[in-house]
Image (tube, rainbow, N blue to C red; front, side, top):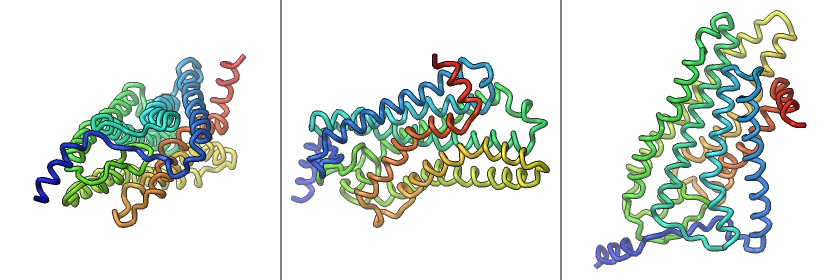
Length: 310
């Protein structure tokens, strides 16, 4: 009898309800306005970085090539979540079909993995520039840069398609309410029936491969970078070297800090409110501050921006 009921519930589960920020009903329009302007700022800020790195000859270097790709990625990443959230806030219709939910989750996970890998490549670029400056033009030639970026964009795709298929092959026979503003793994696993241990282990394994290992590689790169900078004879040289890395370090700390806590915490430690806060941090806050961090702290980027603006 229980099995039959589960099957009936399973067949009825054709869509989910994204609760988002429905627990604060009086602030729905206020949140819509805030997130709408945030989305515009993200699109404009990162779009300007892509534009100046493509048009200004002074920015035709590996560092800005990677930054251009990173800014384009941020536009894609935030576009996987914010438009749906804005629609839900405006219409108050929070339902999302199984297919749309799976598609959104797949894109968020793929783009998140790409961001982890691209930040690692950017750390490697800084490592070569500071620790082996004489061979930098040879090691980081245009062909190598294109190959590294292509590898970042391709590597995570099959893994996350497989992971999404596995998550959505689970029977969802309980509540259809996802206590989140987008379809993410932790809140979806809470709705799944039966044993999700294998799924949780896969999530942990993928998080280690695409979040923890890149983060450790970045830490390793910066330990070498800091060691090299401290050995530089002039204070001016040390200051300049630190300034070229500081922007990247800030973005890494913001993105990886929230992502590591979200996907590497035990299931028992997950709370909907904390998950939403952390997700806001790596899906919206980091893409919003990325242009400011890289342009305001970079003289070349500021000069290119002044040339672009009348």
